[in-house]
Length: 443
Ligand code: ADP
Image (cartoon, rainbow, N blue to C red; front, side):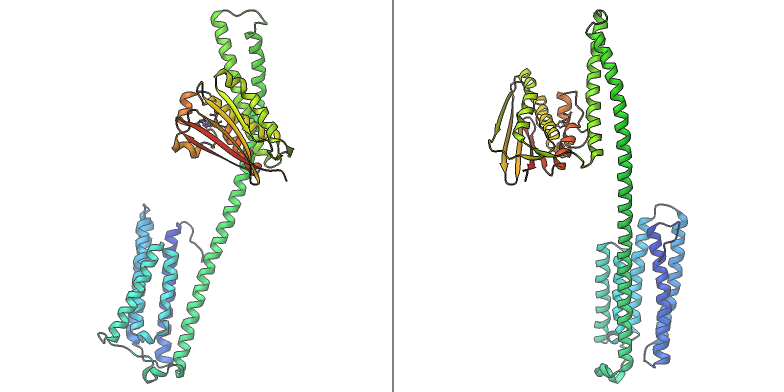
């Protein structure tokens, strides 16, 4: 089943349906001829030929309509869906009429309703497919009830042997053919769909691989670029330091002010470039980081020491509650310390003077649980889910603190996840924030 080039998939479905209907029309004519003229079965052959002729005309009309819709070249999805809907409904009506003129309940080809349902499920939405299944049930029920009540005539194909169908060779052959055609069609369709799905899956996987490769190339490029920028910035910073510290003579008034400002800005830029470089290098390193067994307690103490003076500057009470028997961790000590320090710096940064920051750590099942809680500005609830995204800074943080990269938390998340841990946050705007992370104990 090849898709025509130049048409979108929906239009292809209509063409497919039309082609399938030509086959069905040929099948109907051949079956009516064989049943009547070869096996002498009492079907209303004339009526069946009329229905086949009607189907052929209506198929031509459908072909013309779809060609017209394609020619219009406007937004046509709704129109095409409607066209498919209408076609399947008319097909169901035609099948019911065909059954009526060829034995009604006696006709084993009643199984062909299954065909139509398979086609409907492929072409239509789930809801529409169920609607067509309901339509099939209703149509067949009306046919059988009307024949039963003798509102419409019943054209018996089994004649007198009606009650002894197992002795009617032609009927048995017809039943086997009907069942075989239905089963093979269902298998053909379902395996076709499965093959398509597998192909799509392979294509998605391939596209994913290519994306990863491109991402890697981009990371390498960014790493090289940031490395170069960092070098140049360091040189600029040294020159500025010479100026600011007065090694080449004292600067006067405005000169000193502007040189000082440039110096501060350069420092911030270097800081940003360093973080960016760290992030990119981490991505490039993938899972290849050096791991060893180390004491988390020691790392917590180191990080606390690193942030203490900043906390004191803001009169923030920095406390810790670290259980004594904290298990050792298997990982990269430098990276874990980086995470803790970063979380602590954030806690101090986003907490106003006289607030509190507390570090807690304890064993928790197979993990060690670390909590860094503050009484700071908190994070707006609707922004919590984005807080670990690269470059994301919450709206309130941007108001309080102009400087920030929005990269620290994303680095922290990557590091923790690479250690098979988890990191999450709980926060109430205006009341405070608690970051928690777990790390598996060293085995
Ligand atoms: P940065 O602090 O440089 O902006 P981070 O990646 O470290 O970047 O943090 C991302 C954002 O998460 C911050 O901009 C801030 O909105 C929010 N955030 C992080 N820690 C806290 C905290 N302790 N209290 C309030 N908001 C925080």
